[in-house]
Amino acid sequence: MNRKKFFRTATPYFFILPWVIGFLVFTIGPLIFSLIMSFFDWPLTADPKFIGLGNYIEMFTEDDQFRKSLVISLKYAAIFVPLNMIIALFLAMLITQPVRGVKVYRTIFYIPAVISGVAVSIIWGWILNSDYGILNYLLSLLGIEGPRWLVDPAWALMAVILASAFGVGTMMLIFYTDIKNISIDIYEAASLDGASVSKQFFSITLPMITPTILFNLITSIISSFQQVTLVMLLTGGGPLNSTYFYGLYTYNNAFKHHKMGYASANAWVMFIIILLLTALVFRSSSAWVFYETEAKNSGAKKKRKGGKEA
Amino acid sequence: MNLSKKSKVFIYILLTAAAIYFLAPFAYMFFSTFKSEAEAIAYPPKFFPSQWHPENFIKAWTSQPFGTYLWNSILVTVLTTAGQVISCSLVAYGFARYEFKGKNILFMILLSTMMIPWDVTMIPQYMEFNLFGWINTLKPLIVPAWFGSAYYIFLMRQFLMGVPKDFEEAARIDGANAFQIYWKIFMPILKPSLILVGVLNMITVWNDYLGPLIFLQDRSKYTLALGLASFKGVHSTQIVPMLCITVVMIIPPIIIFIIAQKYIVEGTSGSIK
Image 1: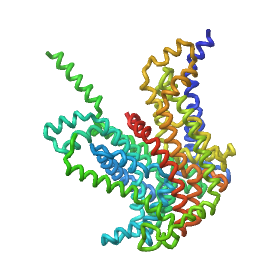
Image 2: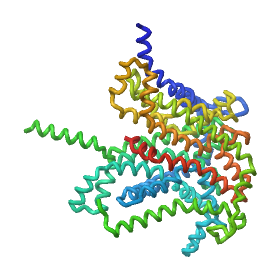
Image 3: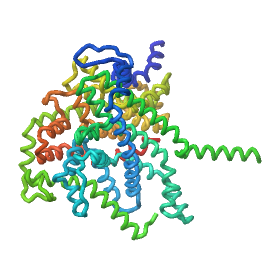
Image 4: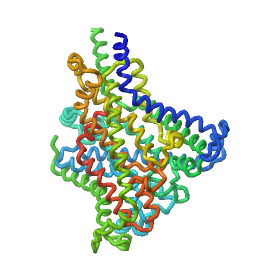
């Protein structure tokens, strides 16, 4: 009888056991280990030496590249995140229009999002080539002299942004499914009231999808800080370190210069920055994110209150 | 909602312009794989090849052990997908269909692991796998997948939460044990979610570059993504062979996406709220 009871209580834990083991061995274990490593001078080939906050002090006081890479990544996020969201939302609006064949367009817009960053970097490296690239050729047909994208330090970051935006489909799809879920009745009521298309967009669509905007904002801030494959292969961090992203800086410290302790400290600083930015976005969200259930609840409350008074 | 003819035309113009932006690079690449090297880097560039060279593909493919890279990619993709589908469905089932002590806090922890940047865990994981003697094997790429992944567990759990509460009652009365209920009743219901997770994982793993770059050293262990990237280093002066391999590499995920896009679109819609 006792055994039976034990099994009944233990059953759910058996089901979640794979994740618990994976969490301990592949996530929290490494996370703690990484924090410990960040207090050590830890070359791959020699014995580690405890240096306390040494790595962090070095980063903030001696290492110029730390600050530069941080600024580059912040700049990238500041341009790429809003740009990507606007394009994604624009495309999502296009493919939710009631015209025939939009599903085909939906598929086309999403395709670049399913190919490898390696392939994206090869395709764009070739298109943006300043000697024979087709983009500058097309610009020259319009009478514009294209910049030397990957060679000019002033333009390399733009080139990376351009190539990243090719994968806008993932975010577009998230907006798309959300816009699709908005009840058509609301729009019909609005257009009966004579609301114009742009009025409908700004006072119905946009407020209704603010939770999704919040979700996309947070996930894309996180992912833009971790961007590394594309820069590694498209520019290699150059020219003149103008695209030496923070992720690449951390990677090189660890796996090129074998400064495992220092790189761990780099990674923790990034982790903390991501957490702070996320917290900041969340805090601001109560001012601009509109939750449907919330509105319903407060509406219901008001009614109840009104009932009492009557 | 009905649109006027004028605005319909306007929408089609915008849709088509965007479609050209997304498709033109692929079309241009596809046609360029058949060009001679001189023509591929000629200026002004030409869209179509003046002479077709299908042998470009064979030359590119045989210039490095791409067959081996392909096999490694297939091995990693298939084995991680099997692992994710099995482990995530078990864990999601536990979280969705049972009440137990610590459930909410454990689920919160699971969700928060999605925010951890790869750099933070990648370095200690490298040390860990080095200790296990797994560096330069495919194990670091495959084994973790058998212990679930937070995002996929979350997607499946959301799906299972939508199944009515009394669903397993009848089976329990019939004397089926917990595992039988999971396997015989819930696995078939979960099918759309299993396909979604399987496809997302296949595409991610097939495309992954950073994992193989860190954990693999010998060419005999390379995956296709890593092989293509290293090919870029060696052949940076020759564009055509690189484009040929790129075309080969992007075809499988595109086909899988087109076949399974219904599941991806539906899966995306339920996941956020």
